[in-house]
Image 1 (tube, rainbow, N blue to C red):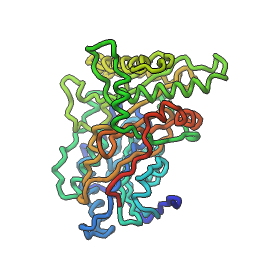
Image 2: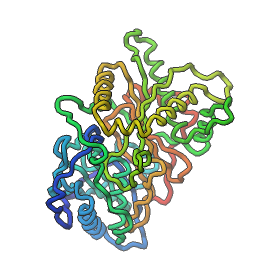
Image 3: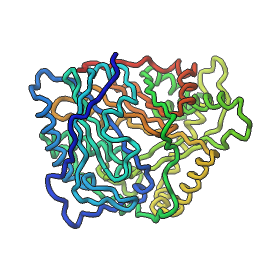
Image 4: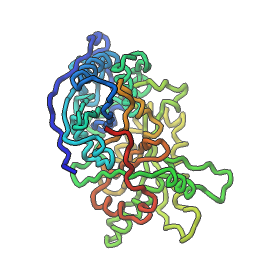
Length: 449
């Protein structure tokens, strides 16, 4: 297979179809927006050539650009520019739009997806989200198929907000602009802005070099087996772990095993005091009263649990006490995200103090954090731009260490884990016998262009 090359054909800025009213010209960032890392959240959707659709690439691009202009009118902060951690200047400057062509066929990309290649389908570096809220790239392949890659700044919204915009853009492109509910920009009312001057800087986990991103596929039987292993067999009343609970417990345990092997030659002083597990949680449904799902912005927080580092399970054991120990600690952390927790979050000051201290601990090496975010059950495959739903959707390679993103497989019954680790940790992780036992060979996607 030839090396993938993506050539930019044209770039432009797409402005909203209608000007933003004067009273909406300043979109105030909420406290939860302020503390997000300045990165683009990426997603790349692949669409095969449709023999029944005679549209040429230029016609498709014209439709997308027109729809983008119209969609930005409803999502007006995305057409502005982020000003530090204070607000978005809704100046209608526009979204960054790129058209490109690739020298390969879609099937060559999605049969064995390489995360680092996916960055070529996003028009901006993922860690370069300083002022630009959104960027979009349309790439055409030699086979006649196309991809649509989008990056949205985490400063303006979370994953639910991302798909709110993406699916609104898709609906508008196919001629159904009212298919998706209009967004509500009210998150700063619930999580008032805080003074971050000279204090909190979100840099934990961001490193420019030495990162490896790999995609691991767990098919349905593997997921079922890990859920069984993660179940507390001594407690008949125990709730069966979810797919995400079981997989995150398993991946974290294997990461710890890889680190432990690496540290055997280190002195005790080099071993971190604490390993933590973080999960992203949607707060909309946990508010009192709950917020609508079309509330745009960052209405998400991460739970932090500290499972004990336990020894390996015995040979022939039907369950792994260390796995369900991790699951129980994660569940306990999730329970803490209650009304009282959200009230403290809304007050901001105490939570900000905690973030400052945790950031210092991570920088000193006292704490090694490991983060999970799940996009399973998200409407990733609903983005129909008028040419059918995508045959495959993927993320990209982050400059974040110890980050795992979960996605449904195209069949819907398995899970893809896109894992970002330091290179030496990845080498140990992917060679781990337990990992190899459960991970499928890369699954090719069907119906590709």
